[in-house]
Image (cartoon, rainbow, N blue to C red; front, side):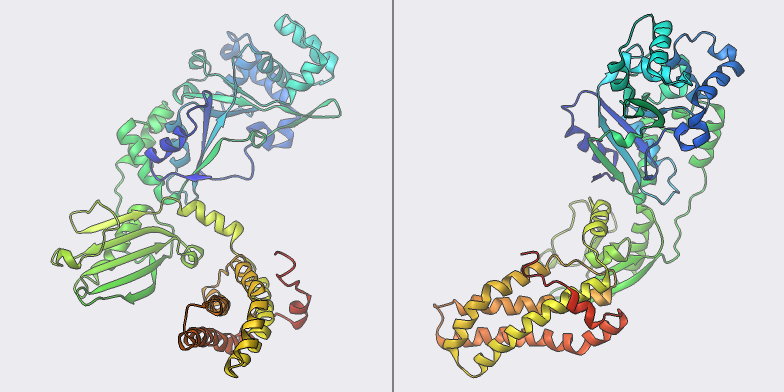
Length: 527
């Protein structure tokens, strides 16, 4: 999955797939469990697909009179909003993008799907068969063959029927769509026809979803950028509701939305999480981290950041601000936006490097997160782990390491350096394996607990450093002892924090001794 914050971002992604000639797009305002055709969303509709087809034609005979092919009639039904096995797609990326951002008040992220599929015209055997199945109550092979020959004047084998019936087909856009479905034509649109499930040589009523077709890539459109992209589509390309839906009601909706008074709220929409003075001898500097307290678009986020920076301008020459969308991103330092303000009175020699070349007229620079939203998904799926499991992993590895650590520290303190070196060489590889394994333990969504776990990593890191100094034959004895002694000192600081707090966390997380004893140690399991 990739992320696009602008129209240009989307086109850059598409360029990477430009070798694929037949590319189709589908835009959605949110991610749904499955991409299904409308008729498959209701069991009654699906079981009576043939009846819905027949009654639609009977009830609107004048509209269907000039249409001779089943696929033309099904496309017309789609235009009227009648449940069908068609799924709308488009050959226009900006159209798909519009559907992804159309409802910019919806706080879900939008998505654009890219598909590379062979195009089929309306008279291809695939399209003919699938559209014929819409009309039939009886799916017996002989009945399908007879109706196919009656409808299209050609034969079709049983092997062809079973193969083609289960294939979802992407239809080539044609001029004829203008009459069949004017709205679809305006949208540079066409459709995919969902195939049927086939079980043991029998065609089922159940239809396949579009999930059965692997997309080239899925592009995520973060909620924060929906409004700005929607505005850009309108102002630069005139892609808006009136273009997509040429009917008069959509014109009214478009105009009301376009000229509606929009005020960016000055209400505090964030929590100040960190405030760190990082001044130097030549410049007063501060770093701020804020956590959004409600969904906000990118303009609102910038406004909040600037309002906060204003409070610090009198006391500081440089202000950095880092914005996290939620607590998980805050823990992972995954910023939706980074801002920087530098006083124009600060000498050039004292100014830090700008985070971006573009500086606005108030002295602000901004860096937008290019991948923060997809990274957030990745962290949720692959990094964050149950707190109890994390505690058991950390505590178990810590107990294993402490035995070795205490042994080496006692030898070192007793100045039994020959035996210390010998046993250190025996422990080195195992400690390093623990150090590597701990990096894959994962993170907690509880910031305080995650900070506590950091001490385990600090302990193991300084313990692992000891073995690097043990091998340093180039150092004199005094320097060698100093470096190793310093590693023990740093490791013991982490030990003190762990030993004073782990029992508190164990009780909070309801971890039993049995949980720890039943956990398989990392070494030997993953290494």
